[in-house]
Image 1 (cartoon, rainbow, N blue to C red):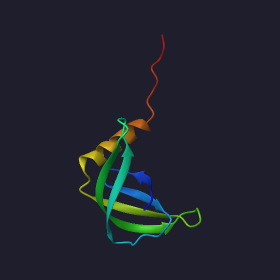
Image 2: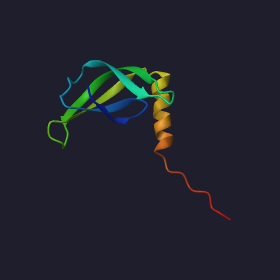
Image 3: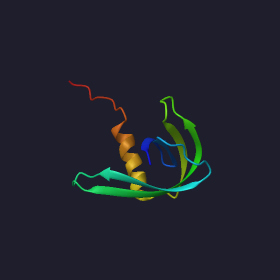
Image 4: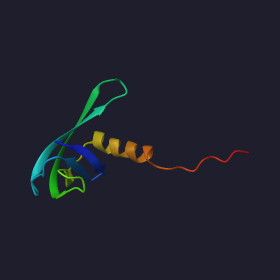
Amino acid sequence: MGYLGNASEGGLVLISHLPLLVEADFQLRFKLPGSDGQVHLIDLVARCLWCREDVTPNVYDSGFILYQPPEEYLALIDDLHHYFSFYPRQASA
């Protein structure tokens, strides 16, 4: 269906090659690689609030609101937040 462009606790942006129906509910599934070599699945129910053409030709960005995101999704958001955050370096003596 597409690729994750942005994610937060309450919503996400999906990047796809087809425009999506606005005001429609979708059942989405993330497939994530695990450190154990297995694929981990996170299922979500979300409503598409908007869809517009990206600056890249034939690519569309769609914004979704999530209905009751599962704990696995919230943990993923927390992990991504920590991974992509900047922390001060410890001063050396």
